Length: 232
Image 1 (tube, rainbow, N blue to C red):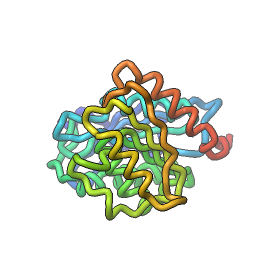
Image 2: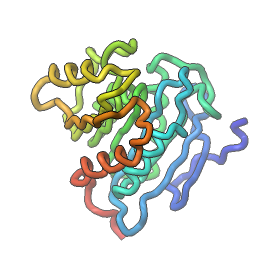
Image 3: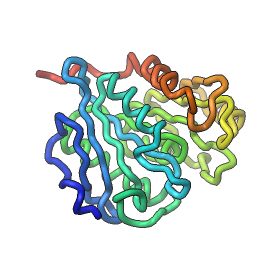
Image 4: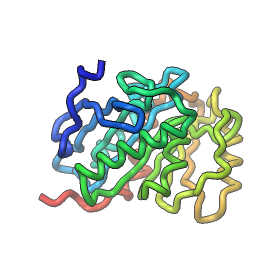
């Protein structure tokens, strides 16, 4: 089915492009979008989706809202399906192979946007994958939405914490990731490595009826993050 996708472009597209990228376990289904020319900054964000085995994909509504918020902040964006999801090939690999998938997408983004600042963003399982790879991939901005820091089988303990700007957004009525466990995890991080935490009241894991509020939270939090505009 991957023959339905175009080949990965050699430059960052000016218009929305959906394509197949060569990944470590086969083709990866990707979609890239450029920020509006008048506000475009020299940055690109790669955004990761929630758990593949629970139906997570790059078309998840939280993922697409995060993508929209970052693109409206002047940042070019790339969303993609981890291995085994949608048109992406391979089998689910508990976050290990998915880390390699992320690295492949980041490598493409750096090739087509050389010198651009890299941001990583993720929702739920996607926030675990982006956090565990933020240091090795050299991220300069990190957005974590509902990170499953406790009780979901993902070990956050050994992760090398980033020193970059880092935002965590958590719904205080999350029914899948225990909010207090996330707050306690953040409180236990070393000073200087703690993220900015935004708690959203009466908000579930999937931000039902609060997606536009999530957009506003992200845009406000990152408003001072972007580098200078792209040179003409």
